[in-house]
Image (cartoon, rainbow, N blue to C red; front, top):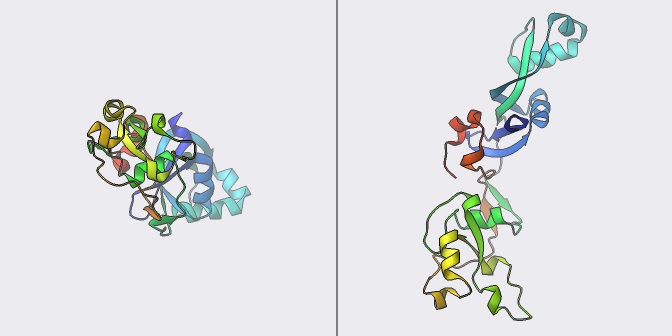
Length: 200
């Protein structure tokens, strides 16, 4: 269910990460983030009796909402924003589909069309049919992102053999921009839309 996840934004209000709602609530009470959108699902209603019995809870709530309250309804957090700045470049890049997508800008490296990750495929520049025994083909330098049509059209040929030149030479990146989590526009909660739009 979508309401089990919370979208965390950086201080520039760009997507930073996706966490479970429990983690978001804990970080809210630890003063690490502010909740800016909620789902309709109610976690709990804390009444006056609880607040007077547990002064520590009252103080924590005062920090979160900025004032004393006779009661408070806590809903499942949908979107939150970090209170501290985060680095905008990540190093030590691991080989993965999402990181290859980031390197290639979520674009097919043959036709240049930009697509969500779910509509892109990891394509071998030197195809499996042409590997030799000493090859290590599933690597940064032999993998690019391709749309389904281009991947099928290229088939078991090299780009030269297929007459399909690459838009860029595949390399292992030293760093990648911190683009935040991959968000499939077809499966994001309604509450996230104002903060992520519908772009891949």
